[in-house]
Length: 114
Length: 111
Image 1 (tube, rainbow over the protein chains, first blue to last red):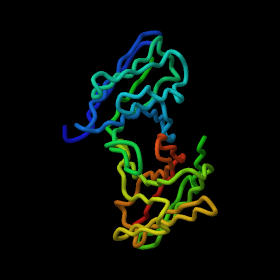
Image 2: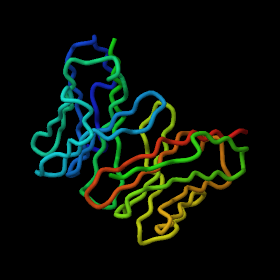
Image 3: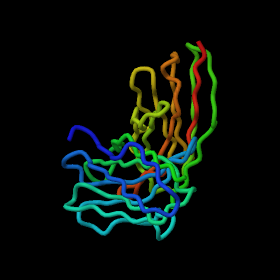
Image 4: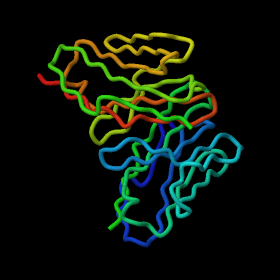
């Protein structure tokens, strides 16, 4: 597509439920990133996919968080047993590959855990 | 790993004045330094970037400088306008690492 597409744009869930967030990167972009932005805060790295390489999961805050990227394109971030502190905007970004090129961000999914 | 510090956290300037935001980084292997602008409720958007083989880059009213020895880089906005009001993020990365972002600077341009 023309840009990075994320869905849903907003998600309200009850504490303890599982949620899935979806990211569709720009066509041809091999690198895909997930970041989390809490209210009024900076961007916290979560996970990074590059082509067929094993993902860099070093930013995942707990084992309740996982992500996959199928066919080198669409990615899904799953949060199990959601907690109130998981409430944030989850941003996905992609870029053509590694190296010195900027990301293009999606509009994000605003997750609210009640 | 990389650590990026950004100052100030908030900045207010009069319309027409200049604004400067400064960042420092810790990893000497970092070679790419982008700046993002995020308007309220919107996605971060890349406004300018600089690579480690360059000391300065300009694009109309915005410029970025890089001092590799001191490990710091700065964003300069001249002739500020109300539409420049936003949160600005600096970031740093090396060839195969994700961007590490500063905590952001909220810029307010007062008309």
